Amino acid sequence: MQMLSNAACGLDVHKDKIDACVRINNGTADGEIVIKTFSTMRKALFELRDWLASLNCSKVLMESTGIFWMPIYWILDEVIGMDVGLGNSRDMKNVPGRPKTDKEDAKWISRLCMYGLVLKSFIVAKPFRSLREYSRYHKKLVYDRTRQINRIEKLLQMHGFKLSSVLSDINGASGLRILKMLAEKGELTVSDIQGLLHRQCKKTPEEVAYAINGSMKTSSCFLLKLQIKKLESCDKEIEEVFNCMVAMSKEHDWAIKIIASIPGLSTLSALYIIAEIGTDFLSFKSVKHLTAWAGLAPKDKESAGKRFSSKTGKANQYVKSLLIQCAWAATKSRKTRVANWFWCNRSRLGDKKAITAVARKLLCYIYAMLQSKTLYDKSLDVAATDTIKAKKLDAAQKIIGSQKRDGNSSKQSNMETNISCASVEIPKNEDYEINRIGSPKEISEKVPKKRGRPRKVAAPDEVVKN
Image 1 (cartoon, rainbow, N blue to C red):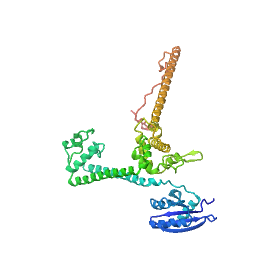
Image 2 (image 1 turned 135 degrees about the vertical axis):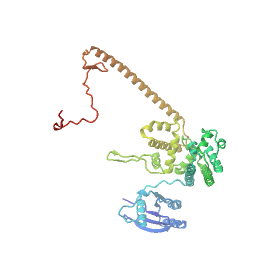
Image 3 (image 1 turned 90 degrees about the vertical axis):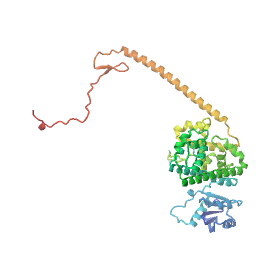
Image 4 (image 1 turned 90 degrees about the horizontal axis):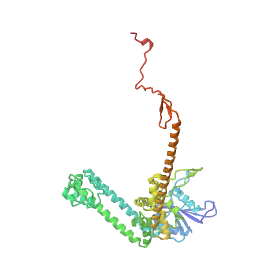
């Protein structure tokens, strides 16, 4: 195996230190090895950059260890002509039986880098890195908001208030008003609830009052006020982060409009997607590579002509979970291509596999539409719906035609059997009966079945003489 570069560096990154190993090609199999340790402080990172430049090292590989690799990557990536790569820890494990130290790990990574044995992980382009930070923080805030709603529900259940049994969302217009009034007074009457319910609420004030009948202590009311205040602050912070995301992505409004035109996706979904994968897709060779990176394509696992389980693998959970949610939203309308495909194949594949396939279709749409810079064509949905209707009509006509042919054949067979039965001479005997088709059938003697345990027969010497 020949070396692919003159000098390659492997970095074993930790929280407080970096072990760097530069392998220089000198014609031998291992090459010349230079090892040095650096701190992770920002000033030391610039020293690492200058040291690599002094050794004419143009190829660097490091392991993706949490978030510690990020500041190193951002600094080295700015150097013109330096190829910086990030490898998956699954593909960079050392050979078993070798010593395990930080310097040995750096040597192994430099060897992998020199021979090009590790595929580099995808790193989003620089214009989208700040947007990715905001999008992931937005998702964490949504999770925090959901947890806060669950805390409020737990507090109500602990004190015997069954508000969630009569209202579908305790955080809705009616539920939030009732919670605030309950935190102020501690107990509510029917007249109080009557002015708090929204006009679209299906429950009557009497039903709601029956569900929250009782009183809450002053300490519990104060705790409920704090939790409602926390919930409102979460809503406010989520709105602020969303506005910042919209302001940061003004240069990519065209991509947001294209993605949001797909059924099941919104502006927020579009912001999440471009923050994770960008808009150019230069790092992906084809749409198959993109779907495999997102964890929406089945794995190839075959040996000796046998095909094993082809489950989807682990991948970017931000993109995968988002597209699964968008796929469920797209299936609500049955007038689209993806929805029709889901409802036609869910019984054959199952819900989970079918919804994963729909999410993959949505990602393929995004890839093709961003490449061509065209909006979603709704006329194709109409054509797909007409095609499905035509197929259903043809299938119905085939079923009706087969039923008619079966009916005619059954009538003809009945006439033939009647004629044959008329020519058969049935004997007049009690040992025969006539079955449904008119042919004689022998009656078997019906022996009554004995129920219960069989009676025990006495032995000859035990027989009592009368």
